[in-house]
Length: 295
Image 1: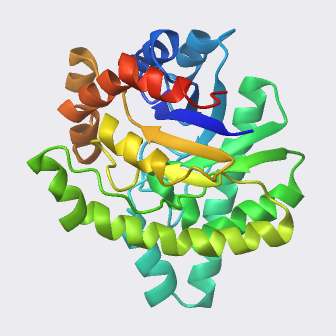
Image 2: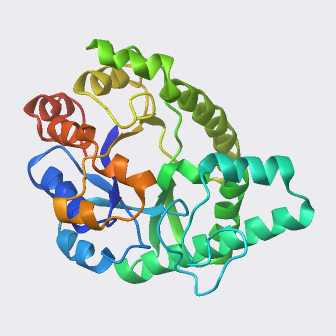
């Protein structure tokens, strides 16, 4: 039986982002979302989905915002306990320039923050069953994948699924603008995440950790279209579990004025987020999914 998860990241990152995601759940095709727990809007956001039928996932976050671990990290955060190291920087510093002691420090701090975010998620949602992914896919970095494997055995949780970002290549040129996904950054990220996903799959198969069979949302990340979803699904007819990732939540005008991190603000105010919400609310997407077994 095929499962298709129409998924939105970033729930809880702001109240309006959470409200947008709930709208897509109530009147759109959405049935799954990832929850950021290191947000001051977490409790307000969780009230919005209380009682609603939706698959919930922990969105591990060491990319932005404030660490929830009650300590000043030497590596992971700045003096105000805010995350500031990019995915690329973490990879470079861990694998290319760090000595053994520095690597142990980096891994120790990330493991502590991951553990505390997992425990907070379980406390807030009153569960020991957990699906896991991460903000900007940090968890696919091999040593962070290993951290999750270690935590699985160290704390009393039942990991239902860990996101694997293995996306089969497809062509979905609906406009001239779509070409940028095949000649720009998204194509390189698609290649890199597939490479790392294959490493994850080998580890997960060996340990019996469950993961999604197929993923759609890297090639067209940040600007996914109905045509991209349609063409992506055509490539995964044989998959049992499919995750389709969108980002329909955006900042309100008031939140935009208050949001301090300019690096991330441009993503949260992008007009493409409105476009992705429109895709989720469209009748054509509902019809496409209804033609399959939709859970």
